[in-house]
Length: 257
Length: 267
Image (cartoon, rainbow over all chains, first blue to last red):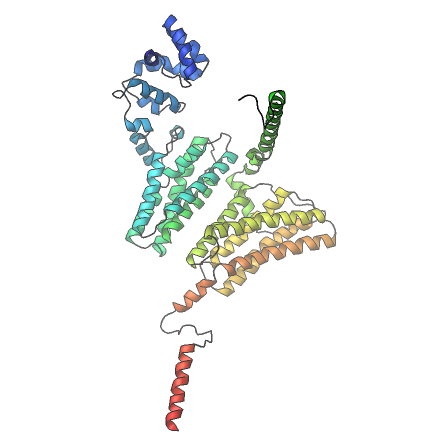
């Protein structure tokens, strides 16, 4: 059981195998300072070694810093929990990476398309908010009498793939699928507002068409604002906004008809 | 394992395993090389490097036929504008199908719209490129894709207007004027890049026919139900099904029976 003590010294041995256990016993038995741990860590992940000294001080108290670190690998967190025991486990929401404060911040950014966006907010791929919004859209459509969960899922999946390909072609920096899915999902929020208004009155008249066009414009403006600030594509916001408008137009078609 | 490989023991087994491993490695290396060469999306990157002003200018130019056909006209080799126009055409088709309650029996609305538009863009471009190769015209595949893609701008305008305002005469006017202008532009560009009367006739005749007929097809295939709905919604003043002479068997049988009874009574 001495292996668990070793975990208190080096938290981020993410590739720990049964073979390393024997070598670890030998090296830690001989010298207890961190040079031994760094020697074994250099065989594995150099960035993990950099985390170990600083997080020794943070260890069981607070884990808020870890959610914001994009290079954190999930293996290290699970080793932490395994080692610390039940009392010192992080709360479930933080373990899942769900941070309601961040979700709220991003929601506010989407709801106000005129405010300039911070380019770094999309560094962390957060799919919880988008999934909540997609479910809200499906639920409000259900309230209006349309069971379209499958269509929402299919449209968003294909839309993410196409936008990912287009953004990779048009920008110098690459994007990941998760980032694109996250941004498109967050900007779906005004569409939820449209579909909830469809519960109350029918959108198939002239005012409904204008409301739908306004909501489509709002969604695509927010999405293109976030994409251009995150990918440093100044001057091409309209070129990004148009495919986003087509995608959200499909959602509006689903909502109106 | 005692070194047995496919039934061969000892040295033969080891040799067999090594040969199989090597073949697998070589095959995997070649496949990944081919994949990184052909599936590399970066080869398309230069064609998406555009500014909004350029796209707007090209859209407007696609409706203006240029008369100068003595030297080859410039074609912008970009793919962003054509791709967005094809997607816009898909969206307009979907909107038209939804408003007219079109029912597609074998397939989905989305699949039909995407298949039609992308099939036209890619298929007709490839066919025209093949014809251009036969007729010795100086045009590359990307230029052909770009030319045809921008030619769909006229289609988008026409369908957007006529799917919402339903007059046949209005559609025919738009078909001739708007469709005709964008076709004339494509024809002028192709003529300027081809030498010889027969070759010019083949290329231009084909593109004109295909382009105009596609607009006609899109209009009539996807909105004809609207006319029927409009007729029935005209109100109590207009009797329904007025234009179609119909023989309703129940009515005619009833008439026949009453006539026979009346004749029998008089007799």
